[in-house]
Amino acid sequence: MKEFKYTIEGKGYEVTIAAIDENNVADITVNGESYKVQIEKEAEPEKKKVVLGQPVEAAADDAPAATNVNTSNAIKAPLPGTITQICVEVGQEVKAGDTLAILEAPDVKAKLSQAQAAEQAAQALNEKAQRGTRQEQLQAAYEIWQKAKAGVEIAEKSYNRVNRLFEEGVMSAQKRDEAKAQFDAMSATEKAARSQYEMAKNGAQREDKAAAAAQVERAKGAVAEVSSYIDETILTASADGEVTEIFPKAGELVGTGAPIMNVARLNDMWVTFNVREDFLKDFTVGNEINAFIPAFDKEIKFKITYMKDLGTYAAWKATKTTGQFDLKTFEVKAVPVERTDGLRPGMSAIIEK
Image (cartoon, rainbow, N blue to C red; front, top):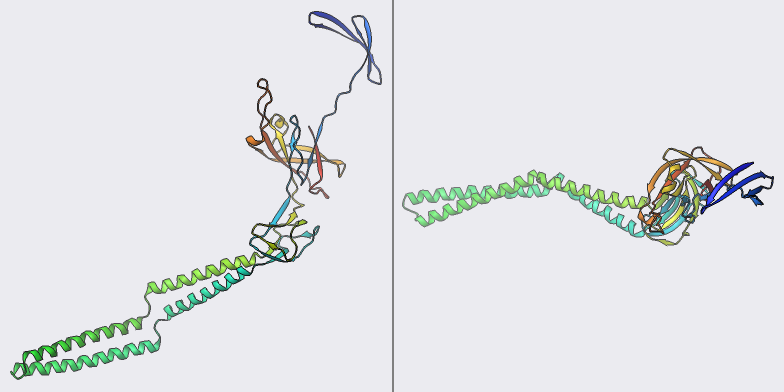
């Protein structure tokens, strides 16, 4: 038996609880009057459901929320083209590096041909610069020089002969001057011919050779760039997993960035919750929480690995001007503590409020 005294609005009350039977009905006396009262059982803690791999609706304002979990690698088209072959099926397990699909990109192949042609042209110019003047051109320059040398010798003899006659008073000064001019002109021609021969003999300048070599490297870079695009026409798996969705069919055109398929990484399962900040006392990075998995009819431990403020767009707005304030929402990520066989995206995980 328990007795209580209360004062409500200045009036006193004496309450006696005699007994509570198995149906949770209590015999109560209030100021000498007897009553039978049905006592409600204590409500069980509310539970919230989290869906692995699928979006769920936002939770109520007074409870932690859950968002979708993404354990998939989205395979997208790196360049526009035509799907020529789909090499896998939905539900098939793949390993990292396995071929998933093949694209055909005719414009990229055309660019590769252009780049290869430019490389060949640059290589030819470089070989020409490194090798120097052709033997035939070098021989022709030498012959022109020798011809100019012979002309100088004749002009020199003619000038000397005319100069002696001038000194003897037989030849006029004008004739001597003409012979001297002829000799000087032939000497200049011989020097020019010799310079042309030396230039042909030495070949291209060092700077010209360096420029030609750089053009070759530039052309090789263009070929490597386009070749990388060709390599990207073969789509491969970046990690082990299972094909969950395939979007286009063979023969369809796709653009750059178009989704081709999704590959679920079954060895990297995780879940995120959207938790209002007044519930964060139970969530700390490194802590472990229990979640009930209906598919297995048992609880699994998850370890919290990440927490982040979602920003003002996800804040809970107060509805009263007094007694309430805006509350932020945090994203909480957790991973299974131990590997659980059969755990898949889309399964429900239930946590207590």
